[in-house]
Length: 603
Ligand code: M6R
Image (cartoon, rainbow, N blue to C red; front, side, top):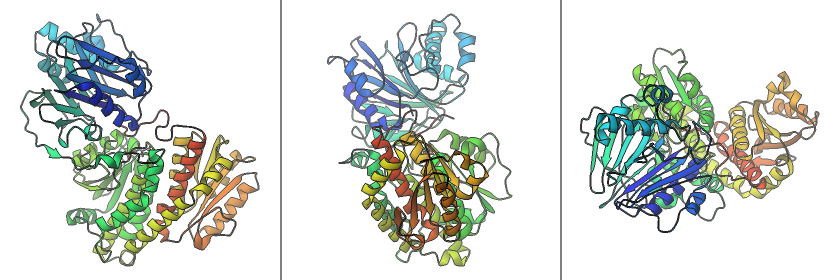
């Protein structure tokens, strides 16, 4: 989603452009930068498409000691140069970049700005024009005007604002969209993601909602909208910048798929002791055990990991578990049990849809636990408890290693709960051994990637649509596999409970429709073979992915045997590789599928 980078006190152009390039993975459709040299010269450049287009539009001598930049993922108005940020006011005095959505921008525009000539369709321009108007009409300083305007704004924002009459300040504000201040020696940086400016500093302050700041090269003042000063404690970010590099891989997605064996081994070490007993914060286990029902909320791939989590919690922790789409639950809150506990699954920890549910849970005093890959993220900070997914930075828009990490952490929690309550299934669940087997299994799947590439080219690339089908634990896996294939290859793919096809959807199967059958469930394996026959006899081109003990010699991909409940950890990797190779063979930008963003901070 949109990205923000700003710097003050240092040659700004390259820091901002490189910082924006580090955020490219989040998905965007236009970009822009404003630089001011503090000698009266300001430079505004905006371009559609990639950062390289923006760079190409800039002349060599354009630089400044202050700079703000933005990658935009269009919400209000098309991805055009006029709608790209920075947005500016009629007098060309104020320049602003903004992430988020201003919900009442139409009202504000109608109420205060009917005489203003707008250059864009954006909600952001309304805010910058209004700040300009307040400064002129009310004769207040810029920081005061920013606070006055934001007091009337409804919505989400991370904002950087430069006033070119006092360009040695960057004014900042945050509500519901991430923003952090990075502290340097005689310079300060501001960014929506620390990853973008880790080459500048490792010391950060996360702004909280409702905070505003006045940043100079050697100082910073943070306040709330009422003007009360805020003391914030800086912390050190502990991420290896190399962990976010592409290494020798052509795409991040393949790198991240191939990192999964190490993620599985690392999680086993991190969350299990020598004997395989979970090492989980006792407070978290206590809170989970106090609940009479678990409710998992998430979106996209994380939602699919939640569906596997339901099976794990019900089997090993013996607790009824519901899984909901955060976007639906936020405004249609489900009926609760007496002692619910909410679990939020989120790679980024910033998904706005999940945050709405979290806020509602906080209002209702429901205990909450976030499982996320970004520990300082909003969902982690605001929940009662949080746990790290330990997957390392995930850059490709398509989530891969975060999914496997989510399933593992759910399995660890389920075992921890079940062992505490004396559940036999949990005690006998050889998680440590199975994670080692899963890591080896994933390696074997990765080893067979040429075969998957060849099958993807033969069956998928020329097809407009495809199906994944499965039963039991393969059903949620089919949903995830289908999402992966469609999001990166643009092949319309549906994940189906195999037996459901005959209740309607089988009418879509025609000659050569690709159907990928997942066969990991021993209870329904024979029925699954029958469902596969049904589509074969209607002309489908079938690829089968089966666990070794259920496999037949003619199956295409044979997976090593591991505990049934953990089979998604291995079979998902085959699906990820099918998606990767289908996208690559079609010549698509695998890491940045069209219209998508890595961190979805709008509802
Ligand atoms: O950061 P989150 O896990 O909360 O993100 C949720 C979804 O937006 C995300 O999983 C999305 O579906 C990915 N593009 C899937 O690959």
